[in-house]
Length: 161
Image (cartoon, rainbow, N blue to C red; front, side, top):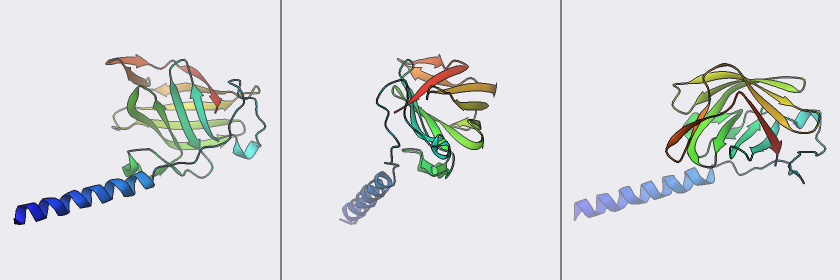
């Protein structure tokens, strides 16, 4: 009987912890774009707060380099960070651990969610409203597609969604 009571209490605690974690997930999305060109009106003080998408590799970035308040879904242990890089077909995330803005460019330090690989990158806001992520130094970002590693190219174009 004691075992059943202990198991019931443990199950209820696990369930309530799961509910609390789900409610803490970041649910804020930023400006929406009417087209894939990303041509929307943005203020200079909000160009690095966005949900960016690349359809070719089915990847995205959620970023807020101004407030550094993005929580990585299902990886809340990292706390609030400037942003992260995710993929539709892979549960792993690449976390932006540091971001410094200089005009229409941001210098990023990105790590994988295991902490075993890192890189320096630049995210540039282009004049046509798109963004270019360029790896400057360090590891090549990789995602898993159909049980195989796929390398993300050195330069990757995103649009704001």
